[in-house]
Length: 423
Figure (cartoon, rainbow, N blue to C red):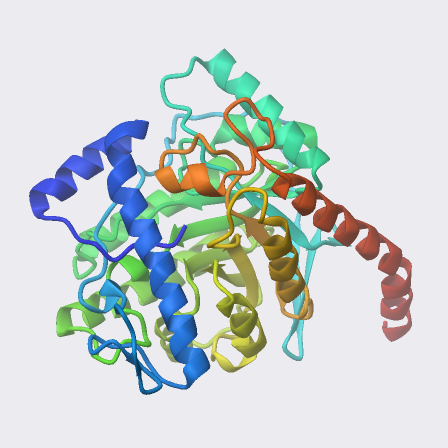
């Protein structure tokens, strides 16, 4: 989910980190909810500024029109909630060992995503329920229920944020119901990236994570980091540039991200690597890092989290952003729609996502359940804690996803014939 623009003191940050590590619904809820809602409002302001041909600044002006409030992200990036803990290396899994190879074929600025050799659209679902404190059996029952419901709704890819939620058990259940998983690895945005020991430790942890899960048949993508730059540097559309310290950290992270991505690909060429950010406001950092380290990285995917009408603009303009990768809308939902009024928004957003299948791999709805760790989950969730739909939004998403699957299946013989002729 997109991050808000509030900040905390060192003491507050430590308290939030402790709460987040425990993943209790109380305590983390207020901080994270403010963070997310303010970020979404910032995106709305950006959309207005873009439409008016101006920019957003602390002067709160867009295209000559003074706005009621500018996004606080230009003043100070958010510094909460604390990052999730790294994956637990002791967590095992029991599915039959053997990777289902996932590829992205690139040619002339077009990208084709395939699983086991079969082209697919990523029809994703964000998943972040509070599962802490549940016994293994109860947690398994919850995963069995939720993931089966997702599969029935046409979802084919699970996307999340917390390695403790999407772990070996979740991978096992996903495999049993036919879902793939974008396996998350959260990043400590407070780390001192100028330290060789810190960078080395980060890459060592990445290596262990890949070795732990690379042969699981439900694995689809390695999802390294989510909105890391959004929590450390102002968006590119702010009038004021980042501070020297902010720019140094963002450049260091962008370099380290590429090092990590290249390491993952060297260890496991059978699965692409995904990096996610808030809208496209932080894309220039990665674009510059890629320009400094040019290589064929067709397996690298840039994920955009977008909730406003700017989603369509982001998709249309992506080829001009300077990042030679495919695009995934890694979070989407209609921002201001009330329950019972979300279906039209989901249809419009999915149409925008599917308008350019030549470089957009698909999208992931935010979010499955209302009983996630943050108050905004109550707003965006499709089902309640008992797995019951809260309105008609799930039905609308299921229709979109099933229609997409049928259309792709209908095109498959034609695509196969064309590829055979070309070869």
